[in-house]
Image (tube, rainbow, N blue to C red; front, side, top):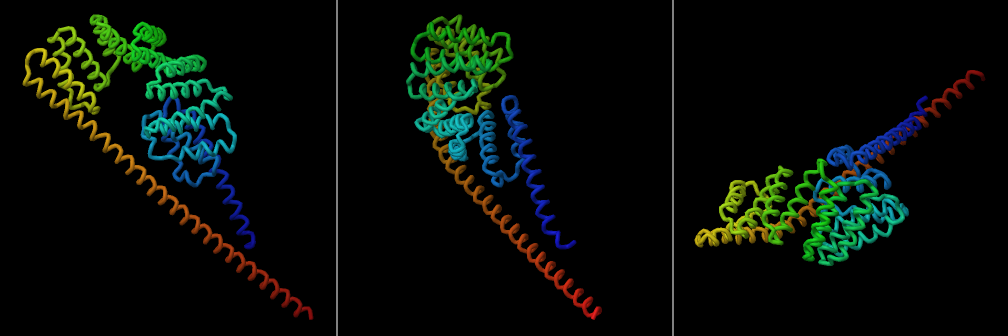
Length: 401
C-alpha cells in the first residue's frame, strides 16, 4: 500500500486548491453584494484573502477591481497602487465589455486623483466607448459625471453641462436618486460659474424637489448652501440667510458647519450688519482648533479681517490678515508635503510588493523541495518494494527447487 502515498498526496493538494477557489468565489460574491451599501465591510471581506498575489489571473484582476471600488467609495487614497492599469489591459485581452468599461473608469479615477487630468479624461472616454455596448445605466451615469468634472476643471463649462445632463438621464434609469441629485447640483454650479443665476436656481430647485422629505442630509445641506450663496451674489441677502440657516439643520459635521458660519458672516458683513456677522464668525473662531482644512481657516481670517476693517479696528484687521497669509503659506507647504508623501507611499508600496514576491518565491522553493523529497521517498519505497518482492520470489523459487 505504501506505493499509493504520493498519488493520494497529489489528490489532496488538488482538493485543497479546489476548496480555496470555492472560498475565494464566496469572498468575491459577498464583497460585490456589500459594495454599494457598505463599502467598508466589502473591503474587510476582501482583506480576508491574505496573499492576493497567489490568486490565478482571473481572481487576481477581479480582486484588484473590487478593492479599488471599495477604497474609492470610502474616499481612501488610491494613488499608491497603479495595478488597476494592468487590470484594464487584462480585460481588454479578454474582450470583457462590462469590466473593460469599469476598469477604464477606475483608471480614470486613479489618474484624476494623481492630478493627471489628461490621462484621466482619456481613460474615461475609453470607458464611455465600451459602456455604450453595456446595459449598466449607473456606470454610464458615473462615467458621464466624471467626464463632466474633468471638463469643468479645464473650464470647458458648456460641454461639462452636457455631460452632467446626460448623467442625470442615466441615473434616472438606474433609480439612483443620490447621484441624480448631485448631478443637478453640479449643473447648477456650472450655471453659477457662467453667471446665469436663473438657470442655476432652476437645477437647484430640481434637486430640492427630488430629495425633499428624503433622508439625504448631505445633499440637503449642499443644495441649500449653494442656493444661499446664489442669492447672496444677487444681493438678495434675506433669502440667502434663510437658506444658509436651513442648510445648518441638515449638517452635523463641524467643519462643514464652520464653512456655513463663514458664508453667513460674509453675507451679513456685505449687508452692513456687522454685529450679526460677528456672531457667526465668533462661532467659527471658537471651533477653529477643530478645523483640519487649512483653506477653511484661511477663509475665516480673511472674513474676520474684512469685518474688523469695516469697524475701523485696523490693528486687529492687520493681525487677522497676517493669520490669513500664514494659512495661505501652510496650504502651499501642505501641497509640497503631499507630493513628497505620494513618492514615499509609492516607494513603500514597491518595497512591500517585492517582499511579498520574495516570500512567494521562498514558499515555491519550499514546495519544490518538498515534492522532490517526496519523490525521492517514493522512489526509495518503490525500489525497496520491488527488491523485497524479488527476494521473496527468489526464496520461493529456491524452496521449490
